[in-house]
Image (cartoon, rainbow, N blue to C red; front, side, top):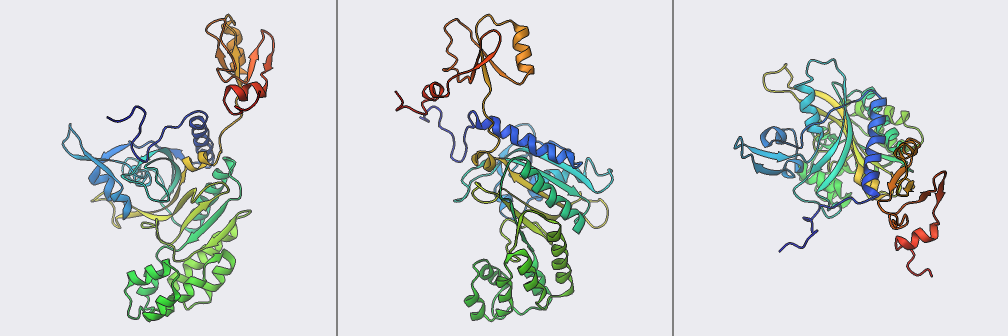
Length: 389
C-alpha cells in the first residue's frame, strides 16, 4: 500500500505561500519578456515522441517519459524541455512570420529521473527564444533580457558564465594536434582541468584553454593570444563585444565547458544569483530544424534561454508579506468587494466564533478599519514560537 500523501520520487507539492510565489515569479518574468516584444506561446505538455525527441539532443532525449497513446496507438512523450517545442512552432505554424521571431513561454517540464545535484523530476521553466538570427546583436539582446528578467524577480548578485561549446571540435578540425588522444579524451581531460593528462597523451596544445578560464576580460585576453583559426578568433571577438555590453553583472568565461550545451553552437551561457544553489538558467545560440521538404539549408539560426523558477522560489523570492483581512460574519458584500479592490485578500468568517488568527489572517475588519492582529499571537497560532508563554 502506498501511504496517503506519498508522491513519486522527484515530485513535490507546492504549498502556501510558495505556490503563490511561483505564480508571482512567472508573471514577473513573462511581463519582462513581453516588454521586450517577446510574444507568449503555449505548447502542449505531450507530443508524439518521434517529433519531440527529434528536437532534443544527448541526455535530453533520454529524459523523455514515454507511453502509448490509447487513441492513436503511437508513442507519446512528456516534454523534458520547452525550447524544442518553441522551435517547432516557429518553423511550422509561424513559419510565414517575419524574422527575427521573438517568442516566450512558461510551463512545467518532466524528466524520467533527476540527478544527484538536481533530484527534482518536475520543474517550472520560463524562457524566451529569438528565432531567425544568432548574431552578436541577437545574443546581446537575449542575454540582456535574461539578466533584466532575473533582476525583476529580486534576485541579487547576478553573474553569467559564458562558454564556447564547440571550440575544441573547431580547433581539432583546424589542425590542432591531438597527440595520442581522441577528441573525446581531450574533451574529458579539459572537463577535469587535467593538464598532466593532456601532456601524457601529447595533447598539450590544448592546455592554454584551461588557463583561459576565469573573469571574462582576462580570459578573453588569454584566448586572443593563442594561434586561433580565423573562424574561432571571430567568435572570441564576438564574445568580447557581447561582454562589453553587460553592465553591473559579474562575467566569467570557461571556453571548454560543454555539459548541458549539447545543442548550442558558437556561444552558451549559464546564469547564477545569490541564494540559489547551482544555475538559475542557461541559454545560447543553436539551430532550429525545419520540417522535411522546407527551404534549402534545413534549419534556422536562433538564440534563447530558459530560467528555472523553482530555484527562485527555493531562494525565498516572490513571497510577499501576507495581507489577509478577516471579515466578521455579516460584513456586507459591497464592503468586501471594496476592500478587495484596495488590495486586501479577504477571509470571510462563516460563523460568529471564527478565529482570525487560526485562519492565518494578518488583520481584522472592525466595520470601519483594518486592525493589525498582534504578530506575537499570530506566531503562536502558526506554531512558529511554541515556547512563548
